[in-house]
Length: 178
Image (cartoon, rainbow, N blue to C red; front, side, top):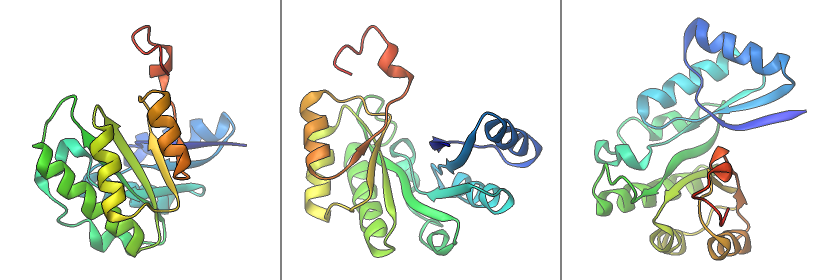
């Protein structure tokens, strides 16, 4: 039995077809990840309509300047299993770094307050990510999605009890540490 722990399923017929294809390929569970209030609502709707699909609710660091409006009230939905995708992305800096840190810290708090897992997206921001987690407390069920750190970052995350997920980036010539 396979689980896709991080996907972005579209709403409507396209999403239903996506889920059906995954199930036909042996994927029994899918976690549909929200990146802002709108996509988080969509993830919940998709999860409600498909057995084996669960949702996360969160704000991606690219969208941190939009804040957390509409996020907290979604966390009570029974389909929600995690807060995220949240974190820090200093590669693109679509949102100012202080805003990213503030919004990430707030989402760490929401994960703990609601006893939910935490899905972290971090890119080129490892020290600040670990600093936020140290200040806010480390949720017991945390996954570093699309891990792009090196051995030192992996050891730090694993020592805290986190899970690491890897994407196709592991095949890139420019990612030898992965």
